[in-house]
Length: 103
Image: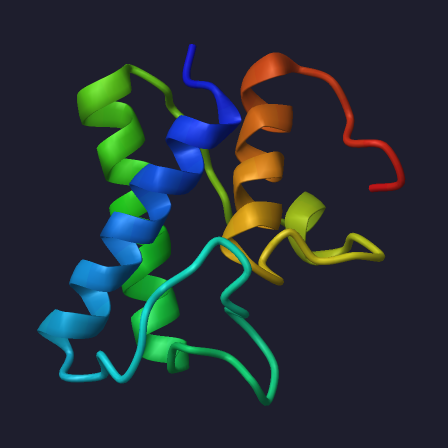
C-alpha cells in the first residue's frame, strides 16, 4: 500500500502536469497548495482533471480502486479537497478502512 508521503509526491506531480497541460502553471505546486476556495491553485475544470488523474493513476499503477468524489467526501465538515495533503490523508483513509480523526 502507498504511504502518505508517496501519495503526496504523486499528487504534486499529477497536479503540476494538469496545470502545465491547461496553461495554468503559474507557480510551484506544494503539498499545502489549496485546491478549492479563493486561493486555489486550480480552476474547477483543472481540479476535475486532477481528481480523475489521481483515481486512474492509483488504479493503473498501484491497483487501488478509489472514488474520491462521493457524497461521503462532499458532506464532510472539513473537505478532503482543501489541499494536496488533506486529499492524501483522505486516500489513506479510504484505502485503510479507518476514519480520519476529526473527519
